[in-house]
Figure 1 (spheres, rainbow over the protein chains, first blue to last red):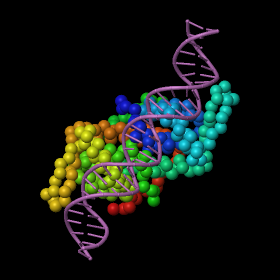
Figure 2: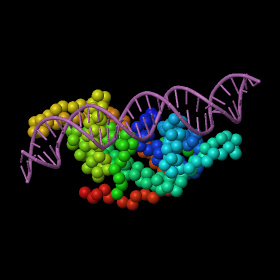
Figure 3: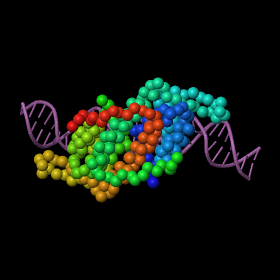
Figure 4: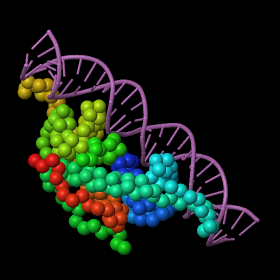
Length: 123
Length: 123
DNA sequence: AGGCGATATATTGCCACGCAATGCATCGTT
DNA sequence: AACGATGCATTGCGTGGCAATATATCGCCT
């Protein structure tokens, strides 16, 4: 059972993770936080102090847009990808794959044991 | 032709990269820098101001050990993995794989195009 | 009615770390 | 002698994750 991923790991890909969540469908902050937590099996636990600044930054960059809505009882700020946000998601995802490939090429020759089975809590 | 990987990406895995280079065989700072550059097709360009502090930090943590040697003309500081450094490499590599898997699970359902062919400069 | 935990958003201050810039010294080549 | 590559090191800056804190509403339990 690996521990929570540290701040340094998140640093490089939290933006991408948030964009990818919003790539599926629009969502509000708290929801994104929970989805990241669930999708990662509790390994990614972005705090409020982490996530909201990310959303503000992405919105300021024009990658996502927001709109308040309280028709559902709760006052929520819904976010969705803008056109350039969708484009950025593509670019970021591709760059991430390249980065992973680079590290894989460094690790591969070392002959480390692979983790046996991907059993992420089922579902 | 993707651009250089930014500081935020490096943040999460530079330690792992350095450890993995030393996992192959002992090396000195400048050499590690060049190997990272070459192994990544110029995508990872750790500056001296980045790399040397990393080495000092890893040594202070007892993960690597150093010894000066000028028998080869040049005065070089050789680093090698300690026992706990080798253990850490295993742990870090495994955690990295898990992290990659998490993000992969987030990106997969999005149906982004895969990059066609891994042609990293040839060789 | 009151209390409490979950939901929901936001901000402040701290700290770690990549990086440009700078410094210094040696080696090989011209 | 001059210059670029090699080789190690440090200082100061900016970025961004995070704990802590603040505020407000909702549903549930007593």
